[in-house]
Image 1: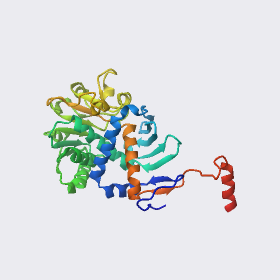
Image 2: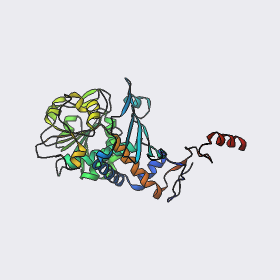
Image 3: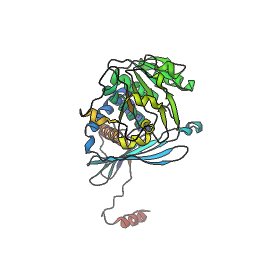
Image 4: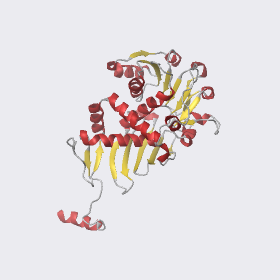
Length: 355
């Protein structure tokens, strides 16, 4: 299989496949920051159409070491799903904590339209969603963001917030100094003012936005109540499964909390620490103008981000739309195509005769 010439349209019964190599070429050809900005637009468009989607909490298989999840949704015309794992211990074995792939299909005939890697794409969509949401919730004019947890997601978050909100000062902290050095090195050419800090407390000083994006599958306290002053926006990305949190409960009680899909977030997000009826606002309502976002300078806003299938659906749509002009896909012979649709066995016999 080879990458297709730009302008190529896949045959009816051939599925475009975007490998890791093709995804990297696609992102680099578009440009990381442009990719993030355009992807954020797709996600925002689908949030505005939120009520047209089929929505359900993701389907998970949990173990002590991690989780495998399926994340499906449909808008009545297209169907998409993502397979994703989360295994923090993997890094000790030289493996990724998160890996993923996804499918976009025509709901009318059931045929897949796209099969793609989504490990890189998930990192991009998570960061694009965070920054898109922050345009509604973050204090206006802030230029400084703290990023606590400097693993695989950190650079994407920094670039998304730079691209969409103009953040130009990044304060990094990780319990592993090598992770912060890696992040600072990767971001060095992007013109950001980067400070590597010695503690989470130091990192949040002067920051109008605090992003927490740690990986350990445990109930942790990355931020304590005394570290969070009035007027900040917290982008809590790391708590994304039952028993995995990053924030002290008292921070939640002081914050206005915004979520993607409440039934899922109450199981997996920071709000699993609170009563089931604690008030949260679904973000689509803010984006659609049906609920307020940031309302005052002293308000603490909290995006309790766990990731939702509609964001992956938007990402699949975006990649599909970019393929014909770029050719960064391969033709995958995935669908049976007998001469007569009812004669699948005859197709097998004809293949035997060719041998």
